[in-house]
Amino acid sequence: MSDHDRETILFICGDDIDAATIMTDLYDADIRVVGPIHTARMALAMAAQTGPTLALVAGQPTGERKAPELAQALMSTWGVRSMLLDPTEHDAHETSDWRAPDHQVAPIRLALTQSRPSV
Picture (tube, helix red, strand yellow):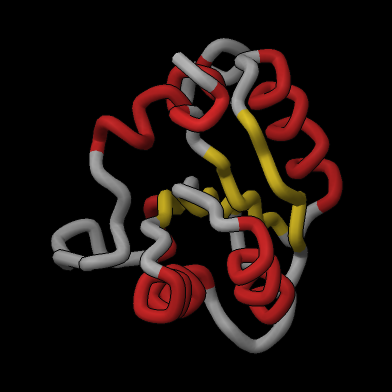
């Protein structure tokens, strides 16, 4: 796979300890990451500058916007689909146009389950 074919993950996480752990897992799996970003506002600005192919939202970002609202804004503004790590952050039965397809999230899930089997 060429460098142009690789996913670029926009990583949003409001917790520094979780962010460090997840960044290590993604780095070890050779997944290209922009972040961690703490706020929804900064995530939207970074999406404009970096052209990510997927947003990974781990927990709630700091600030006013919640994770599902950020995911919707990333999709409607920049066409970037999202993966939320915490399934309780949205209704599991809800159909969302911002949700990333399985082929995009599978490598991330694999990278994160290498060290934490509960993801």
